[in-house]
Image 1 (tube, rainbow, N blue to C red):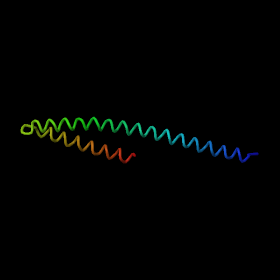
Image 2 (cartoon, rainbow, N blue to C red; image 1 turned 180 degrees about the horizontal axis):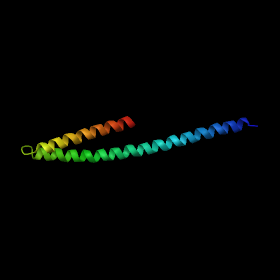
Image 3 (tube, rainbow, N blue to C red; image 1 turned 180 degrees about the vertical axis):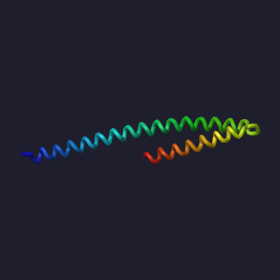
Length: 87
């Protein structure tokens, strides 16, 4: 015969398991977001380098550098939007 104590322990154990699973998933998601953010930060540094390159060579800067910088900017913007959607 199941006692009230046994029933409460069963409920408590189920809640604890669910809580632990959620905490693990949250931890893993934070790691994924952190990795995404690190990737975006590297792209940000690349964009800043390209912008510096463009400003230093404004007259002779080729269209390819400008287009590359625009593409990198778009990738960064979309990446930040993905991270924002995950948190």
